[in-house]
Amino acid sequence: MTEEQMIARLKTELNEHRFNHTLGVAAEARRWAPLYGADPDKAYVAGLLHDCAKNFSLDRVREYCERYSVKLDPYCMKEKALIHAFIGPAVAKADYGVDDEEILSAIYYHTTAKADMTPLEKVIYIADMTEPGRKMEQSAELRRMLEQGDADGALIHGIGSSICFVIKKGSLIHPDSVYALNFLIENRRKSN
Image (tube, rainbow, N blue to C red; front, side, top):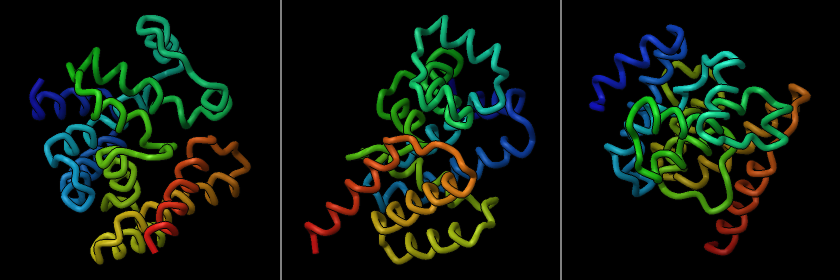
């Protein structure tokens, strides 16, 4: 499927806000890919598809889980905001013809992050937080850090901000987010 075909399908699958967000993430992913050493074309596709399952009903989620043997972990079952990322790779593969494991993994980890992320996983995580529609103060700070070339510093700040946001909401924190933050902090300490 071409990028244009993906965009056309996403326009029918997502609400207007989510569709505009998706286009912003794809553009940001292409923009920041070189900073992280990721392929800009793969970053664009992963950005386009990162939320491809975001507007799915729970019935449709169940259908995809059953049809494609997607196992949702216990945190996902308790925090519904995570579900779209966990089934996103199955949707990207089945509905958009994407079989690149690097892209599928970037979709999977775009909400939680993980320890030892690939360059593409880092790009999609950060692009989701910095797309132009994000008007939060931390998004502006992340953009500033990225413009100054502090790629991992931006990730540390972004994941930390995300964890704080989840805590303030009274939601569960996925362990992958904690592992990701600790991994990045430890690597930063080793390099200083």
